[in-house]
Image 1 (cartoon, rainbow over the protein chains, first blue to last red):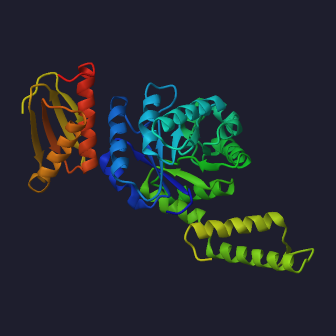
Image 2 (image 1 turned 90 degrees about the horizontal axis):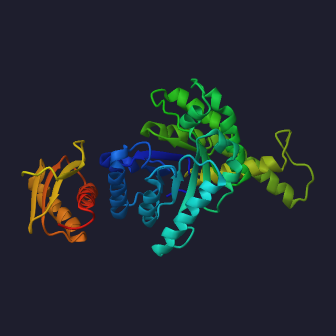
Length: 291
Length: 95
């Protein structure tokens, strides 16, 4: 298993065929969905299905479970049923305030203790889907040491903001920027939003590349064909790796010789460039590239 | 297999799923399995069903399984859901 979270692939929690096959598509992380993908009459069945699957089989990748929101009657039972399975994390929809996260943290702790699971094992990914949530993004990200990622739930956010959906998602640019900024400030993973148009691979790739430019390192996806496209965009190219190697080599040489100014190909190299180069190499290595 | 109006259902008729009809009562386990792969996997399906009934300590029950090529985890899960739904209908008590 690699250490990256480039792709979080949503798998409907009440579809046995999709649950059984999901791993073969190679996502870094699978998220079994108990929320939007499951009708209200089948919430109990989805819990039993995901629970049965994860008790008997454990895919070789990160495992998350999207539970139902705190404003639903399914939330508490979701947490009680899913935490004993020890997924890597629970993804909470409609995360609006730090209190939302602290409540979830407290409930997870209770269930971990009742099941002799070390406290802190199950992390939290926060899905931010409202204007209030976007406004509070930093507080949400810092609300608990369990929080390891925050991301935008774009459809619900558009609804809350009375926004019309545009082809290039221009209307959610501010929210994406805010989520990325707050995630980096809080040192958690910024998860980019779900782009549900899987019939337009070129448009999707452009969208992922734009998200990468905004600082996202992770994309939530809903269709198997989107997984490879995200990995392609997020994995450093050979040219980027070669450049990063040169930057680090020049920097290390300068450090060894106690040189003042560092330059590569006539351009000054300062610390942020070195940090980025080291990031590129670490990411490439984790993605299985030779460096 | 005939059921009364008290029977519960779990599952679906989608590929790789199964439909479970279940009714608590009586003092024996009656299990009927319909599956295209019954010859090869009938026994394994029966074992999965029995295992879940043991978990809940259920003796008297009628179950019909309509299997559409489900994996073992799905068979167990759907039977579990059906048992829980039937128990909930009876206020959590066995017949």
